[in-house]
Amino acid sequence: MKQKLILIFSLFISTIILAQESNQSFSLEDAINYGLEHNRTVKNAALDIQAAEKQKWETIATGLPQISGNASYQDFLKLQTQVVPAEAFGGPAGEYAAINFGIKQNFNATATLNQLLFDGSYLVGLQSTKVFLEISKNAKEKTDLEVRKSIINAYGNVLLTTESEDILQRNVDVLKKNLKEITAIFENGLEEEESVEQLQITLSGVESNLSNVKRLKRIAYQMLNIALGLDINAQIKLTDNLESLTMKYINLDLLNAEESVDENVDYKIALNDKTSKELLVKLEKSKALPTLSASLSGGYLSYSDTFSFFDSDQPYYGFGVFGVNMSIPIFSSGLRSASTQRAKINLEKSKENLTQTEQNLKLEIAASKSDYQLSIEEYENKKQNLKLAERIESKNQTKFFEGVTSSFDLRQAQIQLYSSQQEYLQAMLDVINKKAELETVLNTTTH
Image (tube, rainbow, N blue to C red; front, side):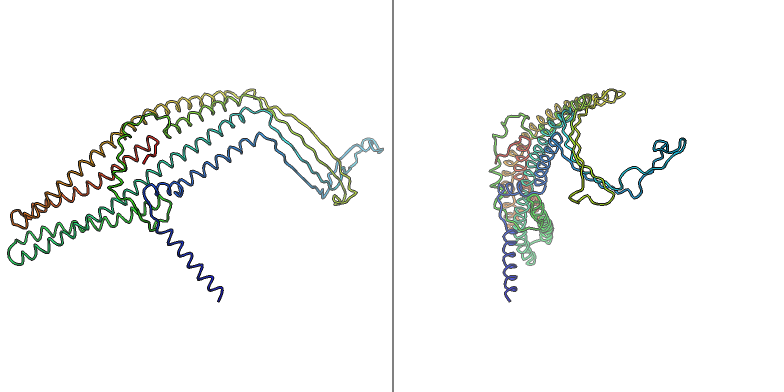
């Protein structure tokens, strides 16, 4: 009975924890902070940095003392036979004697210390580890910027579909009310059947859009969950709304931001590539230098006709040796020269790529500023257009029920209104997204 109570209590606690995890609330800033910690791509980029740090130590360790041990045991099932002149052992001249030399079993234990004294490629490798680590950190920075932008886009898409659903639902409610009224007027013989049919067509189109937006809203939430690193079907709540977020994301100071590319992560990655190519040139040149290493070995040997190597009176014979080895490249039939020239060519290419990256980034910054400014202007324009479309639709609706205008004119006014509503929502989303793009290329994260 006690075990059952513990099991029920554990399930109850697990249910509470899961419910809390699946009903999280996020402002956009909260979502960005959460995603930069839990997004799976970000996690992998952080692991890449850890791997680069370990690889750095791997390279350093190759130039530090290396100690290895070895133990071997041999049992000659049949000793090798040697043929020697018999007269060497007092036998008759001209004849040979077959003799077995050696001891049937032997045991050998050695320890060896190796130390690299000089290797040009090792020195270049040490420099390369710093560059490789820097590349990993820049890749993490780029990942953070891209994930931040994707979270902003996904968050905005959820708000867009939510606002669209609300607006379309209100439009459906108004159309159903109008259709009910015009149907009653038609049944009393005071209106033509075409007016009813026009409203039915409009209502059918809006209901279809509403159904589609509901499906898109579900997908938008799933995309946001993936960007945040949550389960795809997690239930979350967004605390920002599209209009207030748009006002918050209008920042004209960004249009005057300095257009320097030195801190741009893509420029830093291109600079890393140039540095790595310079090191490859050094590496190829270093292959023409000699390498110098030293070793110190010591051990014990023991021999016996039987396996008695662990007996206390078993004799062991010690030995030791110290050595220095130098390897000097002399002639490679032009191999080293060709490798060095190829590395230099790749270095020149990386310099050109760095210049091209710098020019492209300057153009991208200018284009992003232009797009951001346009999105703000479009937002103000669509906001005014929506107000005008609302007034036009309201006037046409009044005129229609007063019998002054036709159902066709009313439908045109309604379609214009619905189009203006969606354009206004899209304009707000564009402001948010274009600001995120500009911040990404400027390598800034102002809110």
